[in-house]
Every structure is written in structure tokens, then in C-alpha cells.
Image (cartoon, rainbow, N blue to C red):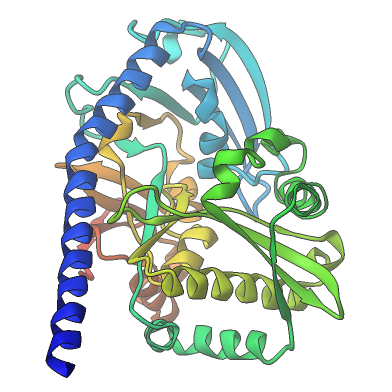
Length: 397
């Protein structure tokens, strides 16, 4: 009898394993189709002349009174990514200069009225040759994916010690967890948490999607909305989409926090960490092997990239999105810009970064520590640009 039960159990296990193998094989087979679909979207954008426009942007570098002026020749859907790369998001201004032909040759000379530009960002067609020396080829964004271990305890053990302490503190704060399911739950998350957080972060430049893109029958069926509560009051929520195919990562979609918490830096940090912890814990319990934490600007010292990296995310650029841009510096502000924004770009189909070094930072332990901690596995090299023009190459992987 025991032998019979063991045989049945092994048979069920074998069947489950075969089903998992089949799903994984199906996911692998469909990946080329995903790339083909992305290529179709790319071509569709190219023939839609309304999407490609010349945009003039000006604003301050973060933490500086230095104003920089940028000409962006590209897809207007990606203007916000240019803002993320160069500006303090609450200070920049933009001006539409009209349509451009994405297949034509456009450069700053096409706009003689803009005589004092600091940067020109130009759409790089995927079939074009690499740009000339001194011009950077950059992805519009990087995707960050965190592999998931089998238990949440194992994930926590992989965090840096400072992050483990913050997580333990958040877990001791006594937050309650609740899963939202109804349209009322989703509307509360959207109106009282996500929209206010977006406006607080991006001010008038916030990109607000309509509620209907969040609450659809299909999306609710394959997602989780997780709330963090205290004293029965919902403080924040996080929305996760679960993969349709085995082998694909789960997807972190949105996070939202009420204004009352956002105004308190200590409370904001606790709630944010608690939300991330619950997202990772739920994904691990569901058997997911990875989670897509969304896109980040190609800036090595970007806080979002650093935060996601501490949770184990590795960044890479998506070759199947086809969108890349040439970044050309046109003024003597290049060094100051690269000191403020550590630019990640593409060289020989690999990710590298160029970092502007300030005179007082040269070979200081704090600067060296930042470089090492900001690096990630897919970043092959870091070029240090010194004020005297010297370039030094570093590699941490």
C-alpha cells in the first residue's frame, strides 16, 4: 500500500514537472514573438510623424544653480526620460518646436535660434552606425530585474546590513497587511495614494494614467493590490502583476502612499520598505523566480537605481525596445553635468558609465565607496573623467 502511494506521488510529481517544463518551453518559444511585436511598435512609431518632435528643455542640475539647455529630437512619449536624466524635475521647462521626420537628419544647426545649447539628444535609428567619438549612445531607460530565492529569509540575508536593519525596523513598526480586491479598493489606491505620490514627486510634469488602465477585469484577475495599514488606516499600497507564462518575472506596477505619510520622511521610509517587503514575500510564496522592478533612468547615481539594486536587482538595457539616443555635449558644462549625473551608455553592445570627478573627490574613500556600491553586474566599465581631461578606466565586476 505504501509503495502504491509513493508511486502515485512520484507520478503526480513527474506530471507537474513535465507541465512546468512545457510552460517554460512555451515561454522561450514566444520570446522571439515579443521581440517581433516590439519591432512592429517601433516601426509604427516611426511612421507616426506626430510622435516625433523637437523639444527645447531648460532647467537646473539637481542641487545646483547651474542652468542647462537641452534640445531633444525624438519621440515625445520619452521626453520624461530625458527630464529624468538631466534635470531637477521640479525646475525644468519645455517648449515644443514642431514636428520632425524621424528618418531625416536633424541636428542643432536646424535650429539657429538655439545658439547656446549644452546638450543635444537625438533619436538613434536601430540600423544606423554607432555615433562618432565623443558622442554617447545611451538607452532611454534600463530595466531592473531581481532574482528571487526560495524564502524571504534568504532574500533578507542577501541585503546589505544597512537595508536589513531598515527592514527589521519596518517589520517591528506593527503594520497590518490587507489585500485589496474591489473597485473601491483600487480607486482608493489610485486617488489617495498613487496620484498624490506622483504629483509630489514630479509636480506639474507628473504622467498620470487614467484609472481605467489600472482597473480592468484582465488585470485584476492576474494581480495583487497590497495595502499597509496602521490602526486600521491604509497608509500605502503596492500593485503587482503576475506573469501569464511560467518562467517570466512578476512585474512591480505601481506604488502609492498617502500625503500624510509622504510628508514625514521617517514614516515614508518605513511604509515604503514594508510595502516592498510584502511584495517580495508574496511573490516568493507564489513561487515566482524573479520580479521586474520597472525601468530606471540610465544614471549610475540615480537614487531609484541604487534603491532597487539594494534589493538585488540587476539592470540591463532592452535591445528589443529598439529605442536608443545619441547624447552630444555642446558646451563647457559637460564636466559639471557628468559630475552631477553619472551617465550610463552603450559601448560595443555593453553597458558602461562615464563619471565626472570633482577635484575634491579624487581618490577619497567616500567617492571610491560610492562608485563600488553603485556598480551592478551588467556594468562592464566605469570611465572616470577628471577636471584636467584625464580619463581613468575602472571595473568592479
